[in-house]
Length: 384
Image 1: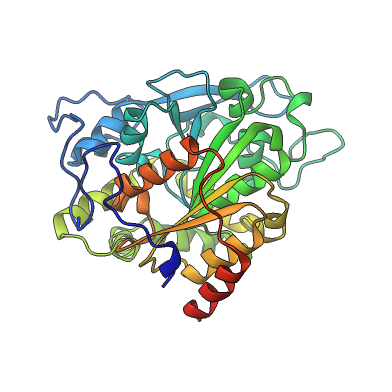
Image 2: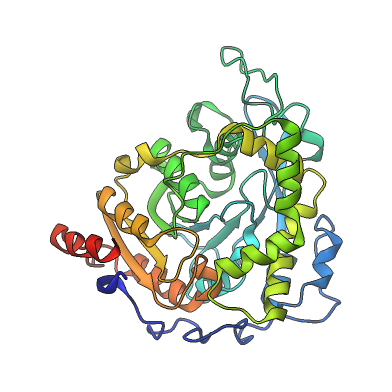
């Protein structure tokens, strides 16, 4: 146990959601209608109407698609996101999500951050979430076997490279492209980039290759030490993706991700978590990502010079907390905090604690205490 970093869920509140012993969705402090008449954007799968969680319904109603140009083509992808309700002159918060997920992960924490006065974006990583990929598969998502000398594409891929090109390609500098990335087109300021799970790998890769675009990093139960995925025969990959989409596996994964859930809550959260898989291009996008090798950012971690907050759920059954300590040791300028009685997705399970940690990290600027190497040396044996 990371005893030196454990925090209490009774931190000074910025909202009134009580999560200290929560196993069911939080009390609806922010008014979110549960009526079936909630107006959803037409591009969402119709099954969104079956979602019961009022926070998920409210956030789903706010999802928009914005045009983002990729590469040298004049064509745009319609990228899905939740835009801020608050416009501020300070650097905005930009929330990513984990593997095969969507911006709906932030249904509880985003309202708390907005209530605290932060300009907050929630962005779907290209290939997941609710972006419109249907008309672009034949030319824009063709990266892996591209002729780099001519910037022409010759094979279909929804690989990490296209995700990087969308959010700010590491191989082609932002300044050389005309509005090609989401950041350059809409955000345009250094951001506080928040990456949970695999989103942490996306955030690290982006921060290393575009330091001018990132003010600080916040990494939540970070999946950053995976060695990527192995290329599989297409029929095997599609069979695996079909299993990944299946309701039984999703229910099982939801139970693993959280400490303990009532059945009704588990089923509703499973529906929310697999909603994006019902879009017609999801299978192809996921197969291409898997066969691309995935993200491998371990070598980039020591290059991160930005101030970083690491948040970890004490009871994470997906990513070993030892890796949180390792990440803290390898990042030159990092603070680590652990949330007790919390699993792999703290921003869903303990939104008030996560929001307070983010708030304190931003507002105290440089005063969050960093652990000394002596403390690190004490923590690591406790985890072994």
